[in-house]
Length: 305
Ligand SMILES: Cc1cc2nc3c(=O)[nH]c(=O)nc-3n(C[C@H](O)[C@H](O)[C@H](O)COP(=O)(O)OP(=O)(O)OC[C@H]3O[C@@H](n4cnc5c(N)ncnc54)[C@H](O)[C@@H]3O)c2cc1C
Picture 1 (tube, rainbow, N blue to C red):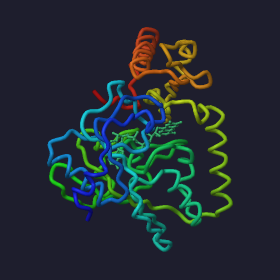
Picture 2 (picture 1 turned 120 degrees about the vertical axis):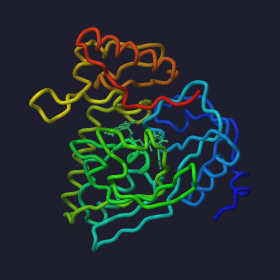
Picture 3 (picture 1 turned 45 degrees about the horizontal axis):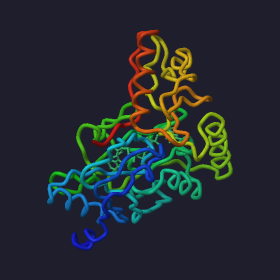
Picture 4 (picture 1 turned 180 degrees about the vertical axis):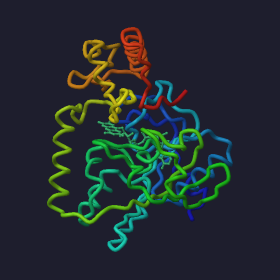
């Protein structure tokens, strides 16, 4: 176990969070610490709790709009990578929450395990994906998770849970209202054919490249949640459809614009502030409400002062 004092020495003040978010937006973290093991993560949280500091756990920063005023207290960046157990008999993988979701997808493919291919190309960490029940092409994290090791930040208790704990629903989990930290997670997959797995991964990636902003253009993925299915339907209606009908693709505020290929992406071509993004999102919501009586709900999370 790393001593709190050793970890304390690694805390840095005034670190710009824009560097750690895919939107490339956000003010400074008052204090910033990168953790590399699950023990360090638990220690960092205990440290913040003991000092009475507000704290925030940052994954890949790919679902966030961080305020221009930044974050008070300690931002803990999760780079944990000490668990990695592939059980070929049980067809399962246990992995630290700070690993990239893409690394998990790759690991599964490398062992001829199928199930994660629809998640190819989703940025961020395994922990962030569980928190928001990330998914694509009809598959979500909840479909594959079989267990997780959690830390209760209030008590420091570390315990194993089954997926039911998370009360997963569309792009959400219990963790949004009942804060717990995921230290590691176990996924159950099926035996597959490596070449078929790789072909599906490439196919998914090609589809994503065709409609998503290229690397280098800031975004946090789909900005609003898709809409509940129409009566008699099972699939959610893409929020992008109503946004497009509302003329979203022509809308911008300051440096924040709606992406020309996908009306549910707000993009930062370089100079956008969090305030610009929030103002544009408010205008989009107003327009869709006024035209169609639909209340859009953000998929991205607003955080910070
Ligand atoms: C180009 C692009 C495409 C995207 N496509 C998709 C898509 O197809 N499907 C989809 O679902 N999402 C998509 N996203 C959104 C985003 O990638 C996901 O929501 C992702 O799972 C967020 O993970 P993260 O590690 O970046 O979390 P962050 O953005 O860093 O954090 C999000 C929340 O998770 C919490 N959190 C992070 N780690 C942990 C942990 N270990 N324990 C507890 N809480 C934790 C944070 O505290 C925060 O509240 C896309 C984003 C981009 C930029």
